[in-house]
Length: 69
Image (cartoon, rainbow, N blue to C red; front, side, top):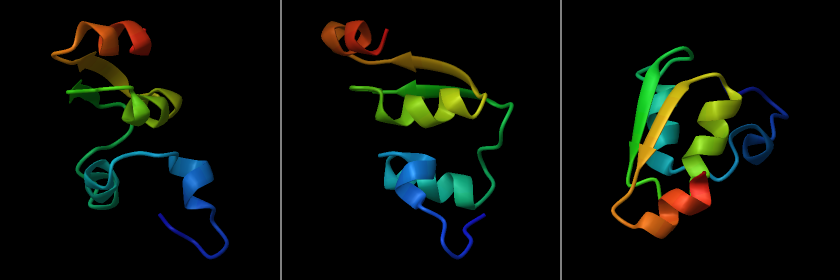
């Protein structure tokens, strides 16, 4: 997945290290349905949506959901 000269930030953005780990392990694959529980400002959603995942998000703070929408 990672090759010489690849700009990881340009490819993955500011995703959580935990999401990055799961992607590298092949546990989250394109086409899967993903729930981002505690989505906050949506930093993981940018990558997931761009890569064609079926994404759902929730957060305990209503302003976070408003921001993500």
